[in-house]
Image 1: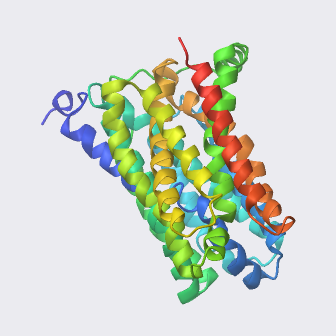
Image 2 (image 1 turned 90 degrees about the horizontal axis):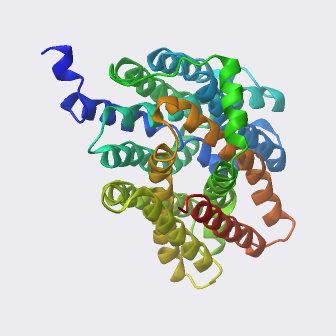
Amino acid sequence: MTADRVERPDSRYSWLVAVIGAVAMVFTFGTPLSYGIFREPFSEAFGISSVALSGVFAIMLFTFFIGSGLVGVFGARFRARVMLLVCSLATAAVAPSLYFTNSLAGLAVVFAVLGLALGTVFVLIASVVPRWFERRRGAATGLIFVGNGLGLFVLPPIWQRAIATVGVRRGFLIIMSVTTVAFLLAALVCRRPQWAAQSSATAGELLEWLARLGGTRTFQLLFVGMALSFAWYQLLAAYAVDLFVARGLTAASASTAFGLIGGVSIISRIGSGYLADIMGSRRAFLASLVCAAVGIALLFVPVFSALPVAIFLIGLGLGGTATLYIPLLMGIYSPEKDTAIVGVFNVAIGVTALAMPPLGTASVAYTDGFTIAILLTFLATVVGLWAIAVGTAR
């Protein structure tokens, strides 16, 4: 089989790239957004307060979003395979690291490196895989984000079970080792196709491009809107398990219920990709945010029967927004700067990610309830919906 026959849009090889990308995606978001499960076990294992640990996890989310976003912007001219290989080596290096540190500073370094590696893999996969498709780009993007949603579904209970069964350090070693294997597989397969133009801009030219971009009203609204479109889930992840326990679930059941949000999102990750191919990414994206807002509003209802409905709607909203924001952006900006576009908006998401874990934890701890935390989550969703709607209006 010749290279020309293999490397064509929407080919069998294109779908192989998408499938491998989906496998790698399982290990990107699932671990950083399991920090609500890490808090108590890590606090006991290392003798560090949960509030201090929330700062460590905020650093992880900062490097996951902002650090990897900067890598995406300024690494757009580097080969994706090489960058994926570096990320797999980084996860291999941190896998045994908890055996060698007991300090808050040491944990901050470990989780900073981990967040950067996981986030960079996300940026690379999310920006490179869609380049292999033309007619089925929405469906292919949906597929890789199914992997992302599967990680949100299975990794929280896997982390909870692993830590409860073998302890913090050994559980971390095992899961990080599996993550390394998945990233190595992606490094072998996931690269830009030969026909896809790749940015050759220098760092100075990229800075000039960013300055021009930042001066436009569309970018300003989208920057705020995308940040808030993910801030609501970052907030929710900080207190969701505790909220579900307060509503009557056991700790294990609450972790599973939180994972179900990611599980339900798999449905919308598949469906929203096809829907975007039919009705457009903008409408499907905004509809997803509406679902999330309604689901979050139901969390105000203290009746247990409202909880499954809330989880279902939040999951639908999460899956749609996570899947469609990249096709939405690629329809507005030049795909030549694929990783740069994904990277710069990852920075937007990271700006809120730095504040959300401490804010979510503190709003519950200092008000002795969940009302303020839920209200902040709802407001983030509504304002994000408004900003995206206005920013993408024609």
